Length: 527
Image (cartoon, rainbow, N blue to C red):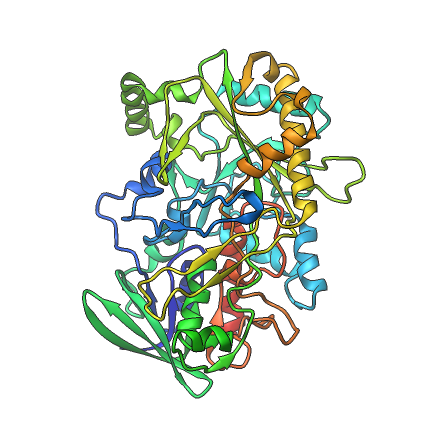
């Protein structure tokens, strides 16, 4: 049980990191807390309605009450399966804006500007061959595909967005990040293409790779300030694994800070409260939790939507289409349309993101339920939230989940931005041709009810878009958890490579950026 590197987490960052370390000739132990799949249910794109909230695939965290949203508690799904959250997410592939990465570099994170990260974005993907080769990749492991099935209402939604003032964008991952466009997804020939399937599975028989599933990391083994291995709980046994060169945490924005704190790296006051000896004082571990707050607004339509497939006959038809041709409603990501807009002319950059789901669903106890009503879902979220939450240990037991304290609407600017998103949803619901088919926006107050009613609605209806980042913030200041080289400050042989390092949120879904972090980490850790 001795390796060059131990990578904790086989998700969006850990998978590409592992593949690139193997290609450099290093031996790697890749650890995954979830179990390998036998039926490979996650490969069916639409199967997320069965995997989210299912403890076989999902950590299924539950937050503490959020006082900024009337004390709301909610489920936060996180993947617990090879591929991590890339195996249960909506498969939406968005890089973020070039300016997002330049902002990271402006904070002192040298090497994380757009010109530095673009080569990694290109290296990791094989995009459709109609894309601009100056910005898109054509030889990478991850397949990024256009939609194989489009609902007619989705095209009408695009037309209405353009009429409302948004530019039509042929590729939101290309030259410009502003406007409305058809979504692109992490799918391959009608199958989900998770980070594990794209990067690790081709190396699974490599003698230098040891992949261990069902492996819960209890803590990092430290020799002074140097990480020398990890302690693993698996099938009731305790295993010690040694890393000759070091340990990389790629367990995600919830689990990575938990492992650090269990290893004595965190706020000394919090660690001592749980009887954990302090190895490195790093008070910001688990702090700076950023999320994209926004609205999921269901609209009742006068035409058939994707919910038509929720009936018994519809399900049979959908399964037949997918089984025969890997086509149809089961073959595509959740969102059909994506848009980034400036909510008012005064905005310096797009401050809102929109999605259109050509179906509507409800959540019950963390599980998704799709009714047979004619519904679509309009989503609007804040791109650059100013509110932050934090995580805390509940105990020193690694089997106990951390306490998650979201504060999605703490900052008044975030509340104002969500309200502008609501205004845009109403505008789109009234703009032809999409607006011609909208019977009503469900649960949304009338425009005539006034701003106070809107604020009450937003406080109760705003939800996280499941893009938690920032809990091991990267930076050059003494409070930053990791350096721009991804080394945990104050340690040797210990790095973090996942979405927890974000120093600032990006405009867009986070999966593509997290994969890029894994790609870049391999070059920083093992030049």
